[in-house]
Image (tube, rainbow, N blue to C red; front, side, top):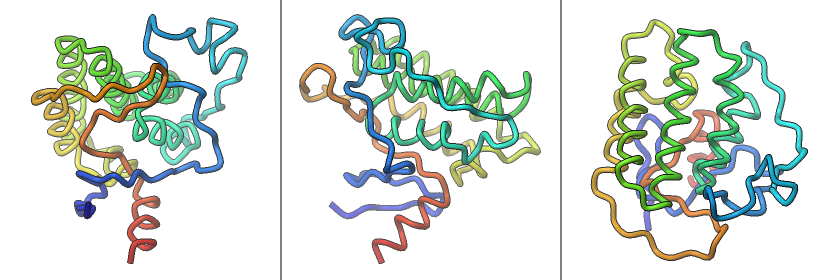
Length: 200
């Protein structure tokens, strides 16, 4: 299947999913609430007693936690992506565009979890809230979405809403397997250049 890359580095209809941190191993399972041990609280959880990646506000975009969140999201580890980005959201200044951006990504990840659980109403609620936050960023002098993903916030908003409107039944996968549910992948601009260059 050919890959179509938009000028703003979002791959559409691609079976190819880039890795931003290829040396980091994915978790043992993609967590779905109530189906597996809680990753952090349960001693059998895949991240039990594992220290989260350290973040600072001045390096949030392009930081390992941000890039790790992209990898997790793109490969269908939505709960885990939510956790990676939550650490960035927590250190972002209240009321800042950065905080809104990370919250939008967290909500999009939550929509992914709800899609996998078959909870359409909750998935719609999360994706619409993510879209609303992306649209609020469109008027911001800080171009965080463009800097982080090379995308205008309006495009991110459109994809967030479209992701949950025309859902098809997901194929069955074994419990714990990751399952991408979105028709797009999120790519940091530097990784997009590397992906495009490698394919030429």
